[in-house]
Image (tube, rainbow, N blue to C red; front, side, top):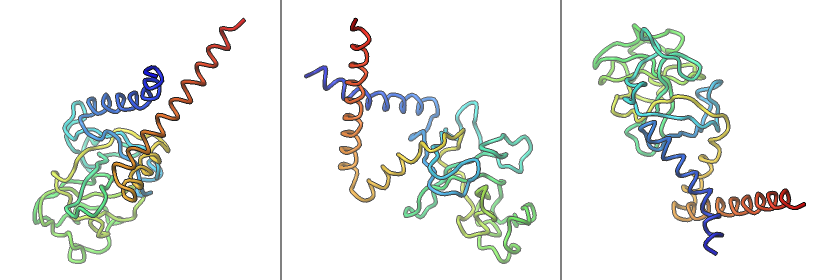
Length: 218
């Protein structure tokens, strides 16, 4: 019985161990973000899993917009792609690219790409900048977030992590779990996911055992 229980729990423990190792290396928790929209296509698509790190984690420390000299290449473009939370707690975190840093009171449209603006500073609520922070955008969107009304100027303290890379389609599981938590609650979802992982792991262990025994038989 103890061996059977251990075999059922082993897959879940292995997944947790991998997540903890990645989190320790990245300096962020959770170390993965599931993409829920197509605003960063074509490099990052809905359902992809993005690996993130702390904004100050060596050797990827600091935040760099795409318009700055020496901007790093991140996820198909230049400049850091970051995760930020808006003060409105009802909204989901946003994964978008940093354009450039602005100062409080600045008419930042003077430095902006005209193709990503809908009008001049007088027509944009986030201009002049009410506080210091960043102008941001989604690679697939036609405007800066601040021009489209998606987000105000993003304060640096709102930024929780930045992206290092992505894995196609692995984020669907995370999206499903989040949807289940919203609908059913945390505890029922945890029980369901843990039970499913245990059952799959148990069947896998049995199958591997049978294959091994069949190979040993003359």
